[in-house]
Image 1 (cartoon, helix red, strand yellow):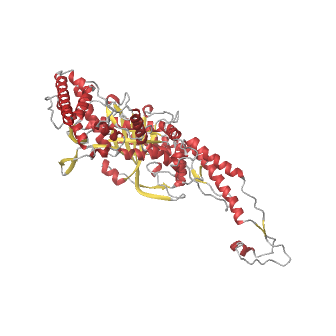
Image 2: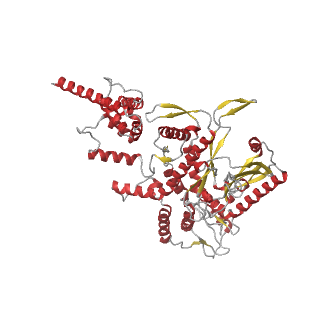
Image 3: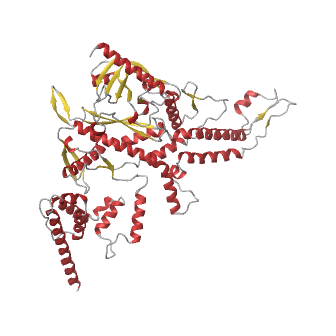
Length: 624
């Protein structure tokens, strides 16, 4: 590539980055202010220059204590949102056997990736960012240096490659337009992050000149070079980092001139990479950005989302002011304010020691002795305003005292009323929870599309089946034919183990789970325990579980031959499992190509019923 052309690209990318950084300065100041308030530095404010500063005392005696309710609100929201971990599956593209099989393999790949890359922990970290700043981003890319070792080439280990998922704070993302709501509306995205020059050389093989970079603390929480990460330290102390450089990655959507998009990576005055977008991670194999955005609160006409912290800051300021002024009144009442005639006493001694108990106070003969002024009492308006502000925290944040203190109000004695209060708590969070579910779904689509593009060699993955048995599956990119991901679970905030247990008890009381003889079958007991979250208790009913697993294996083997019926079979469980399989869509699709399957499994069910009838007759004869 021509040297002059390279210089033009580097200059264009750097100029674009600086322009976007200047446009986003006011939004960054809001993020920094939010972080300060969450951490407890709540006397900071945004000055006229758009920078975060720490406010000074008006008088040396002023109380400046912080009564941090914002932190508890954020922690409560994170605890609730931590339950949002949906189970995903892939819908087949059609009813064809191959599509059904590949959809199952893709589902197993998603399950394996979830555990292998610890996506649950990534979502927790991302939610911390989104609850504080309003937005967070997942970057899903292909890492050639990840995965299992497949051999050596020229003395270097070669790996099969795997996906890598990074959580990117909003400080690192610079959109083309701050007014576009979604990622799809952006023409380009810049991801800028500070890296050590040694790491840059290892990754791209080019030497970049490092510079001294300031990491500024709480009062001006700018990351390295205005992006990257944010080191929180008290006051405005500077932490100088040496040998760092800002790596700027500009991703541009496909255009007529560049049908596969454009990616330019710049650090210092070096062009580290220039070419088309590397990942076919868009719809229908199109090239797209490797980012997924997760918002806490959607802000109309703004790319970055809003945070609940922003709404609570005015209330927190007012609450701190009321509490501190109230304490100042109480200090005056407790310590008193002395009125002293000029020259009547030793002022220096009185200032240092005060009026300690048993103190001998010597004053000038003929002078007026020192006296305490009437301090009055704390106005009731302070307590009224304090209670009012606490209720405003609840109405603005949607986080009630039940969620924050884990205690039930003394006025609530009805279980139904308590359940309604808990459901109301979750109502405000359900919108944010749904955005987390959407981000996880998009992340799953990116994972499957990257595996479809790069995983051409045969791979082995372990998976746990529904029956608890470890399965080893081999697959490659040809086994991924669809990325239509659906959720197998509804919004986790709407259901909990306690609500499931209450529902089961209601069904039991209504008699809807008993058989025609009014009894609760062993198979139903096992399923109830599993639904209620006591799956570990299956050792009590281990034989029932083993019978269910055996029946399910017989369902899978019916395509080869009709299963046998044994004397030791629990015929009731086998009949239930076989009947469920007969009524499934999967079996209907198989029978459309091979009608013999239906006849085999129906004969097998009849044999079980015959054995069960003979067993019952034998039991009756013994009783007679």
